[in-house]
Length: 268
Image 1 (tube, one colour):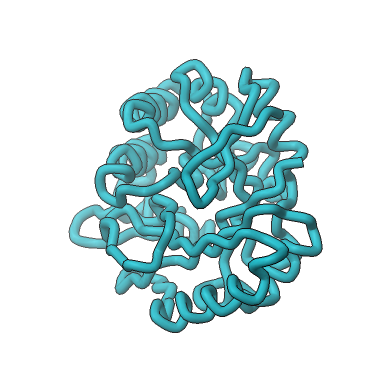
Image 2: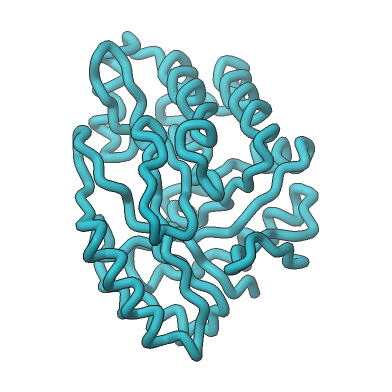
């Protein structure tokens, strides 16, 4: 079992539980490392607000309480188009693309399927391959823009596409855009997360990234890290056994965990 989880959300953004409740659950599960990663403040559509000073203060208080039972790191999920706002007490960051910018408007990709569809109709004439291309062109800049520690849900554009609802993920018009971004990001040497959230919720048959893209990550010698993207305590660490099996199937023999001294490889 991989006893570490770093992509988690609390009541300081769109999560359900307090930092203490989340950390307590991590201890119950026997995790060795745990990370808080609140969404950053954004003024864009569907804003997720975080009281950053209070968030950091509370996380530090919880870390002190549990210091003899688990190592807790304090992080933040940074929004690609907002850059990497620097907070002195943030110890790691996840670089994620929840928004793209088109025709003077920030378009949210993961708020709802209806909004996703409306964005494509109003900005890309209903052409989901153009929509995906715009997403991956933005995603390709996530490391440069955020200086992130690892990359979050690389193919978030597929969130509402289960069963090919909006586009064919095997179509060259889609795969070319995804692989161009992936190849560019692979050169940065920053790990990609294998995100279990939608798979565990049974909203997708595959995780982020898809098996196709995960295999390409291995071919490009990318590093990976497992994440639950949990928004409530019951989700912490879920799907990690299946994620490790998928990673092995794609050729990986290890994943990474984040420690106080940086990344360490763990055999799977």
